Length: 221
Image (cartoon, rainbow, N blue to C red):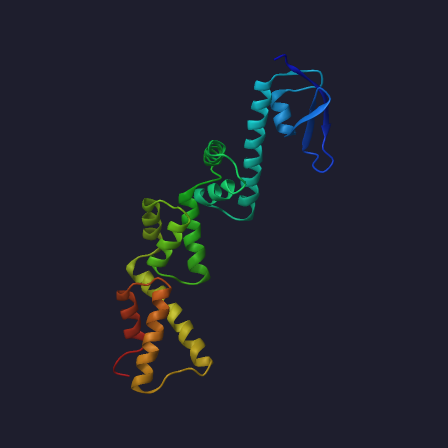
C-alpha cells in the first residue's frame, strides 16, 4: 500500500496543546504537540500505516501520562491506585506498564514514600492501631515488606498504647459531654465494652485494648 500524505496539521480549538493531523485531506489522528515534535511531522510528509500506528501508541502513552499526572496532582498515589484508575479509562496493559515504569523512574511513584506519608497522615487525623493501618495499606496495594518497614517506623509498643490512650480519652470525654456516662457496676461493664469495641474497630489488638482499659477504667474504682 502506497504511503499517505499529510495534507494539514491544525491546532485544536478546545485544546491548544493538541493538533489534528489530516492525511489525504481526511482527519487521521489527534496528537499532543509533544508527540508531533518528537516525530518531527510536517505538512507534505508521507505517513505510512506503520508510522500511524506508532503515533497512535505514542498518543495513548501521552494520554496515560497526563491522566496519571492529574491524579498525582490531587494527592500522592500508590502504584496500584494509578494502575486501577488507568485500567478504567481503559488503557491497555502494555501502556499502563510503560506509564508506571516511567513514573517510577521519575520518582513520581514510590510506594515506600507513599506508605510512609499515608501512615503519618492517617495517625495525625485520628489515631489507629497496627491492624487497621496494615489493612488500609494492603488495600492500597503496598507490598508486605514495605508495610512492615513503615509499621516499624511509625509504631513501637509504647507509642501504639499512647495512640490508643489518646483516642480513648477523646472518646470518653465526648460520651461524658453528651451525658452518656455510665454508672454502677453494670454501667461500667457496658462502658468498658463500648470502649473495647471502639478501639478494636480502630485496629488496636486486645493486649493494647486491655492495657488501656486498665488505665482509664480500673477495677478498683
